[in-house]
Length: 299
Image 1 (cartoon, helix red, strand yellow):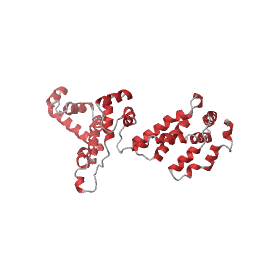
Image 2 (cartoon, rainbow, N blue to C red):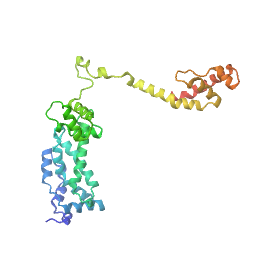
Image 3 (cartoon, helix red, strand yellow):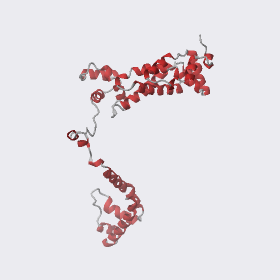
């Protein structure tokens, strides 16, 4: 039986494979899979020894051997996701990233084999890749939607739409709402559509770009709206701050108390301050002029 100490020897088959650098000389996915399946697996003792060296000494050679010995696991898991129409090689590549994350976080003192621990990380990376690349538009963002995405097709009977009883049963099984099942079924049955249609002028009339455009999202209008909002918030507050208390009170009473622009009259403010209405008008005019100058920096 091979001992843990054997892993430090240059005679170890896995070390030999690493020395040969097989990952850089393979020409296609079949050759890669064949090479991966020939790599020796680790015993429990060897795995614990390597993981301990990585944890305590940050031994990158140990980390490399742990990754290499579990590459066949990634290949096996990736095979189960080929039904989504994405390249097998890409799925394996994403799974390998998950495997490396698992090796980095693996704790040999927990009494769990790396193969069991790594499956979660490998699948998580593959799931993320599938969700990002299966369609141009994301079909699943929430936790419930992700669960449905990877379980709906395998639980459907045939290609027909699900019946109410089937929807309810699946919702109970996956612990999600029936509405979520219905929505995900609709998303999966849809397809991507080019927003600008084809090069045919007639088809252009019916392309989404012809009826989905929004005038409110036109760049110039967006910028104008942003500037207006800034004037309404930062600009107005900054301009009011430059006024003396009496001038600010007059402006706020006259123009800022009601949404329709109606406020206190000149005579009402004249009575409040014990001056003439003409004097209130002069103060208001000077305050508005001062505010206009302050707001010019926000234009």
